[in-house]
Amino acid sequence: MTSTSKRQKPKSRSRLPERRRRRSAGETRREALTSARKILLKSGASAVTLKAVADDIGTTHTNLVHHFGSLSALQSELMSLMVRELAAALMDVVAHVRSDVAAPRALVDMVFDAYDKGGAGALAAWISFSGNLRHLKPVREAVTELVTTIEEKFAHEVGEVHRAVTSAVLFTALMAFGDSVIGEPLIEMLGRDRAASRKLAAFLLPKLFTP
Image 1 (cartoon, rainbow, N blue to C red):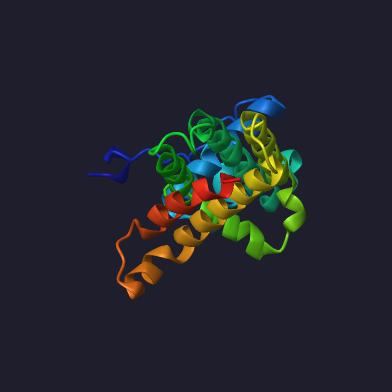
Image 2 (image 1 turned 135 degrees about the vertical axis):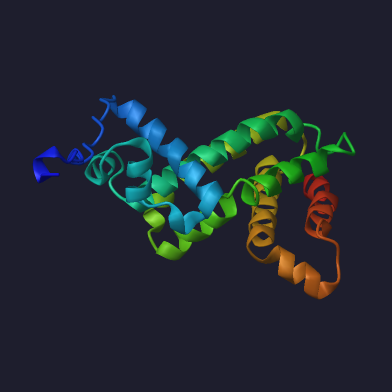
């Protein structure tokens, strides 16, 4: 049998890259933030890179730099988005912190879950340790909005409303952040149950609004 009679295998064609979909600036930012959140929850803050996000949504690293400026800026904007979403959810329970026995624990659980299961704690630590604190401006704006909204809820209260609200936000956020970063091993060292931090926060939170 001659070589010409042998059936030759077709040459493999190199896979052509898929054509990138054209997006508006707003679409690119939204899709990038959605992707960054997905990567954060799946693999942690260190896995949220511009390349990983770009590959996931089918765009280029350069394009993301154009829209966000840097990885730190993208992470900061994601953190801001998470804070705003949490703030919107908290409004349903914040007005009942003192009047409803279950409300403080419900509020604490929402904040702690956002920092732990939602990944906000890991992301906040990543942003802080990066040293690029100027990128926290969007987070600052989101926290300011939260404080203002809560103050409006307590506008009828007698006393230093601003001090009480800012104390409550500071206390709950720091408790949730600490619990998400080192809570589990620390609580184990102390021989307490895993929900000890949440119980303590829920117990103390109403006292910050006591005249």
